[in-house]
Image 1 (cartoon, rainbow, N blue to C red):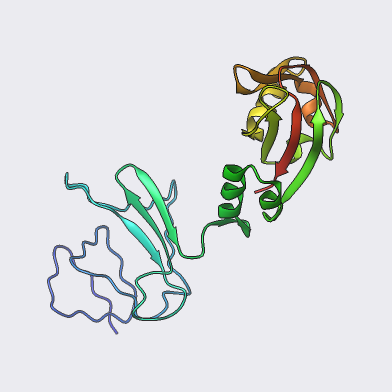
Image 2 (image 1 turned 90 degrees about the vertical axis):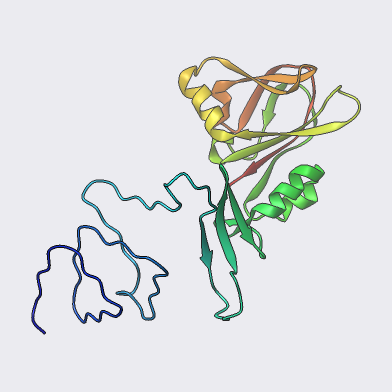
Length: 223
């Protein structure tokens, strides 16, 4: 088939091309459907940065989305969906959400229920401290910086009630980097906290030198 160079607009009810289409601008009105594989996948490349933008740019609000189909059934709207509502992102999936094969749903339920048994059902969880511990040198199963998230359970008044706090490990890492010889206050509230030596975040001995609430459990989570 011969090569055709066209400058300007092309309008056609039906256009069949067996070779390659190169265009500086390609505007499609209506649906674009690939009935066969496109080179084993759909690839977008750029010599500088690659971006994929979904949604209208004409002042009209919308809810752009990406649907994933895994069951192969024509009457299934989607098996999993990523959709943008206003200024937040929603992930809809009947099977829940996982990170590296681990159920985030199970982790969230464990957090809300203050339940170690529920925590233990989440794949990459390690119990580092278990017991009613006050200040001092506390032996832990592994350095806190080995994990992605730390959950700490403590008694709010040293006698009654417990609560969990969630600590992203990057915050501990930043505290150690910025002030290796300093201290970090881990808070539940103004009546429940303890001070930890930053230098102990990367060791198997957590140095708690001042406390207003005993440590009960420390759990490390890998995502």
